Length: 425
Image 1 (cartoon, rainbow, N blue to C red):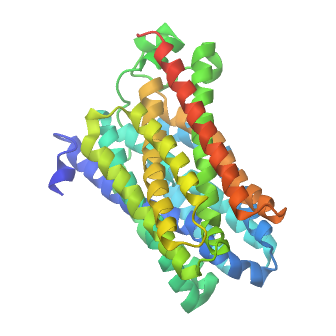
Image 2 (image 1 turned 180 degrees about the vertical axis):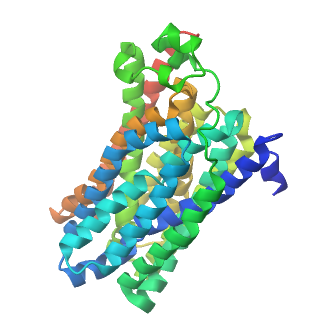
Image 3 (image 1 turned 90 degrees about the vertical axis):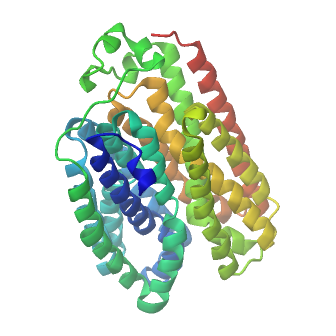
């Protein structure tokens, strides 16, 4: 608590503490219930509702398409209101989504439940939390963001074993019923009490990239509405945003594939389900370890370097995954590399756009990036399931992911070269 209290001096201290501590819990619940649980519950759901593996993950893709479509509007709403109403609405929708899934009598109602879940995720996962932190934590945004992601990294570690236990005791419908209660009686009160009712303070000064958009931006740093859209930006700035978005989208495509298919992939190499879950539970602590390292180093490492480390670690992880072949030790090595890379990528997605483009209009901008990131997220589960369904071997399917990871490194490198060429304000 002493470490937490040192984040923000003076009157901002209590607000930031409340936000960080609340989001530490609500992010675990939101990610665990609406994102990670399907990897464990999917086979049982498919058996009861008559859905194939491709059908199960196709519906998840629909959910993520809803998320990506809603993300820009959610970001703009948080820029305007500060996030309290948006994230509380996300908790209510999360409860409604899980309750609908728990009671779904057929596939059509099940699909409606996941569509509601997509809206809930758009209003409750990292991007809206980052935008809310941006509004209320001022110059200490980076440390607050890192602390939230430190806790959020435990989502899969907590919810994969929890979901398996719920599945074995009360079934998949009962599991979603428990998740609905968590959204309603844990997440909703925490969001309501922790997030200030006002719009908060708009942060700081535009970066060189933001200033390069228009001289008027530098002259109006206190107005979020003054930030131009990417379409109005110079070509070099638009290209920077494009390459950065491509790099983030590739990382999330890989992450979505791992979240939904990792247990099945590891079993395809000869691992038991128990061993695969053991490998999966290593990822969460390693995500936390990467974020903890970033938190400790803090100001000594630029966010751009954090992003570079993240994309390189994802390449190393995919290379390690090609060598698993049923070995628990090799699987754990993969999980360590992947967890570190994925943990740092979450921070990079929140921080790098703020550094390169400034924090004026941050919610709207991160929402636009999130649109394409979550479209990639949406495409991943069904695309990878189709790849496996077409007869592509385990090793070759992982080689595809490795090639994508390498392209992600090249895209990030291109974005950083463009950023260096932008004029100073």
